[in-house]
Image (cartoon, rainbow, N blue to C red; front, top):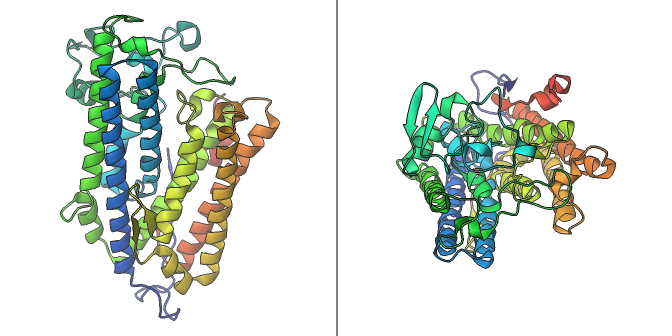
Length: 425
């Protein structure tokens, strides 16, 4: 992805931000401090969700039935809600973005991990020599010129050897989507109804289906433990001596505010509107939906937006019901740039409503997200396009606020939005 730069020069060089604006705005440092507190709480909830997922996986492996598999799937979906709400912190905070690839990388060539349906998946890929490596079935695999011992499936093998093996980003061996594939299996329904239907017996030591159940169990256990480790690391990065907190402490107050708006602008525009939504709509490809094995994409997109609103408003309700609140970017904007703040709040409200339509459409059972983006589905396509348009407008409103405040940010771009004719079908 390329960066779409909004290089916006300060309005009055050498002076304070927006000199002459109302005096009742919270201090920028207080806004940044509250932003850090929100990050601690939100990533803490994400780590707790991963811990609960790990417990549910342990219970499933102890007694692999359809009931315990469904409980593990439910824990995965619940964990996704907490994590997706943190994604507004990813952009602008290097410490978060560096770990994110281990946690939420997608799309993935799932044939690296386990068995796949050759008719739908294919046998080879010109871009990825490990397209059908199937480490669960093979105790030794070749990566480039090196023969790798995979006889024991461990966290180290997954994170240090298989993740982005051979420099191929689609070799995703860790994180939510690797776990999702292991819990659901492939969704072989195309743009028809239905998600993945992996049987619980894929993990049975007595009635094993598809072979290598012992190694599949090891992989699922290692992947869930790694997810908890990585999210715990992300949460700790916001502690007193954590890297993310220290990085912000080195920035000026204006740069701290710019960091907040960078995260919201980049997630709104290039990542969510572009790579996660518009690309799939252009290609009409169910493989381009974010949670493609579980048909959970509608929830993930909506949770992203809920998280962005929480970050902007400086108010987050934790999973235990406690509210974390402090001086917010919204309060600062209302005082310093009331017109631009009003436009952004209206844009965020509209985006939340449009993504809620997508979520409600899927939750009602009318059609899943992959059906909405199907070729020829005029009504479904429009619902998704409305979400894309709202997110782009939200990013534009952020751009307007940035300009008025005299800040400089760089927002993540996307070919799907900036140059859709170049996107290969």
